[in-house]
Each structure stands twice: as C-alpha cells, then as structure tokens.
Image (tube, rainbow, N blue to C red; front, side, top):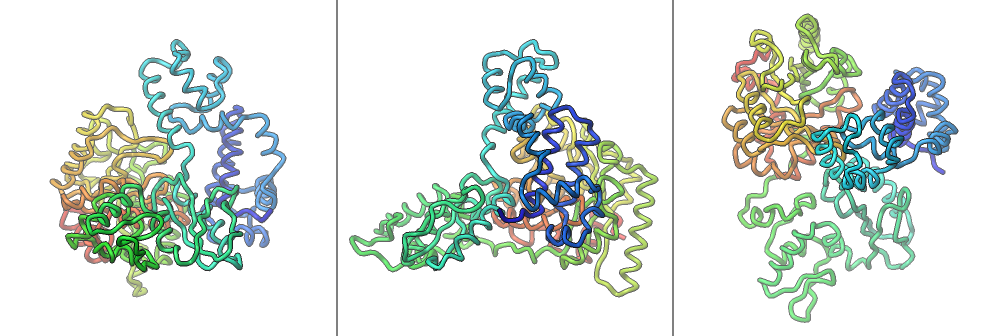
Length: 560
C-alpha cells in the first residue's frame, strides 16, 4: 500500500488512544497518543520528510516508542499494538465514545452490566428501559443520553469537510490520470462545501466505458461517467441540492422548456448547453456558485440582482481568536505571530482562555500582565523593523451560568477585544440558556460572541437557544458574531447567515487555533461565510489593522 499522510496517521493514533482508554489504561498513556496525534496534524512538512530526516522523535510529545509506531503506521498502515487492540476492543465500543455523556468508564459499565457493545445496542436498551435504575443513569441523564445518541447515530456515516476533501482528492488523482478521462470534477456535498458530507462523488467525461464506478480510499467515492457533451449537465445535476434542481426545473417549465438529467429541451429540440453556465443563462439567471445551490433563496436573490461578490480567503486581513501557551495553546506568542504573518495576514488577535477555564489553564490577572507586556514588546519590534503587523490583546472570556463574564470591568478594560463564549452548563433549557447568552451580549465589554451555539459536529448538537433572539441582541448591542472556522464547529451555521445579514450583524471569521498548524483553518470559515452569501463589508476581519484598531477603540477598548 502507499504511505499514509500525517492526517491519516493522526487518526490511527487517536484510535489507539481511544481503545486504550476503553481498556482502562492510565490517563498518562492515553494522553500521549492524543498529544502525538495533535502534533502530527500541525506538521507543515510532509510526514515522510520528517521521518527521513530523523526529526520525528524531536517533535513535542513524540519519544522513541511513538516514533517507532508512527513510522510503522506511515509505511504500512498497521502496527502490532493496534492489531491487538482491535481484537480486544470492538469497533462498536469505539463508536460509543462519540456519544456526549458517555465516557470510557460508563461505556465499560454498560458493557459489563448490560452487554451493550454498539450504538444500536444502546438505542435498544434505552427504548426498553434497561438503563433505568443503573447507577449514574438518572431520569435527566437518560433523557439527555437519548437526545445525544439520536444525533450521533444520524451523523455516524458523515464526514467532516476536510476529511471528505482528503478522500475526494485521493479519488480525483486516481481518476484524472486515466488516459480515457478527459475532464473530472468533484460533485455533490463537497462541491457545495457542506460542513458534513454523506455522499462522495466525482463527475468524469470520457469517450470510453472503462472508468470505474468507485474510486478513492476504500472505494468510497462514486464516479459518474458521461460523454463529453453531457459533462456540464451531469455536473449540474450531481452538484445541486434536490430543492435547487427542482426550482430550476420549475423555472424551465415557466419558460416553455424542459430541464432534466437528459438535457434542456424546447419541444423535441435539445438546446446546446455544453456547460453549467449555459443552463443558467437559458433560464435567465446569472451564474450561481456551486456552494450556493441549496434552495436557500439563491434564485430569488439572483432575480433581484442581490447575489454578493463571493467571499475569498484573500479578503481577510488578519486572524482573531487564537490561543498560545499562556493558556492551552501549543505555541508561543512569537511563533503564532510569525505563522500568521507567513499566511499574508497583517494582524493577529490573541484570545487565550479566561480564569474560569481551569481545564484550559485560563489566565489569572498576573498572567494577563505578563502576556500584555510581551505583546507590547513584540509590537514595538515590528514597528522598529517597519513591518506592517500587529498583535491585538484579546481574551476568550467564559460566560458563566448567570450570564456574567469572567473578570472585573477594570480587567476587561485592558483588552482590545473580548470574545465571550459558553464552555459549561450546555444542558440548560432554552429560555434560561437564551437569557444567559443575551446577558453576556449586553455586557459593554463583549466584542464578539464566540462559537454561538457551541455545537461540535458529529458529537454535540449545541446549546438550546432561541438563536433569532440572540442575533437580535447582537444587532442591538453591536456585538459581532463569530464564525468559528474549526472544522468541528463551523459555528455560526451558514443557514443562519442570511438572517444575520438582514439584521446587519457583522461576522468575524476566526480559526480558534491552538497551534500554528491550525491557523489555516480560517479557510473553512471563509467557505462557510461564502456559502452563507455574507458580503465582505460585514466581515469584521476584512478590515485592515488601523481600521480594526479604530473599531475596537470606538467600542471602548484600548486598541493600543
């Protein structure tokens, strides 16, 4: 088999850690695997080069034993330890780890007492009431477990967007190099840039019939092969959502045309539409970007001439909400700043965790003073060198259960910006949770509402919120809503972007990066904002450094 990349090896290391955790191994040993996986995901060089240079064991958290395992996994995709653990811990138990509220200890308990060994078994046991009376599983716990399980089962077959991209790229390379293939393009949800992907598909044009129907890793990608003349129409149909395609077909009928997978017809005559643009033109429409084809008001906006200029990664001039070693980040201020500069950005907004976030080494007031002193020193160095780059002083303040923020007003006044985020009490009911967030939004120090729903894709549905009221509160108080670009969050959901835009609410596309290798995640946030048809003027960090400093100052922050 071909060598595995760092991302795939990281997934195998996480699998090793999870299986060990389910066996009851020490937390120190388990954490070593998870930490090594994080390190591999942050690699900027190819894993093969790092191994070849002998530098793998010098990376953070990777010693001699892990170097041996990583090298074997990279070269063969296997290791005796992983093989053994796969026989000792079933895949079904591993799936149960994805259910919020079910840690390894509880999974072992359910397995030993009730014989539950997979998601389906847990669902049956819940339905039959077999968990009633089991120690640690009271009424509320069971209710929440039922909700969480339903969400996890629904998303069990879905891939996160970067995972899907990785599989699609493998299949793309396999198909495009076939001599009988003329043209090939991704389709379905990856081309629409959906945050979760169920169907993986490519459309290929060929004059032959020998192109395989499946391709890519584990043959997960469907390959739709058509003659060259049908490539555009096939791509249109394999990309658009059912609702978008139905709207196009209805529009064609209104114009005396018939649009179907077989072609665009006037009577018995097939109209010459060699590409997707030709179809839209024939229907009196401008080009509609593939990621907008969701039956989400795109045709109405097209008719009214209100489709925005699509947002591009280059529209961002800086990155906000990034973490360093001052809390739970893996890199220093200097390393994060230089990595941000290397991306072509002109500013970095540090937002380490606040003091209530003990789980993330949240900063006390003394640590804040040390961090701000170092930021001042670095900014002075950039200015002395004539470098157009600055670091803004921010904080990610926990929103407490009562809606208050994490420091006194005097401490809050020292920051350029404040990201207020919920990190606890996720199970509150809709009304108190909404009031909690609204109170935080109304706080004069709040600049940005961080990952507003708190969702974790495939793992946690998110807060019970009246999101419309929260957006109204943000509009009223001039609070920016974060579009958290971490691939497991992508929060605010693109389906709410139109509502935010109508209210005039600004978005900030933030990577929420905890290491230099995660800074590039901002691109996924850009794709979601683009998909939500957010205009560039409503993106906070599309402003340059001077404009942003003035914005912060106008809101009462120091912006020094």
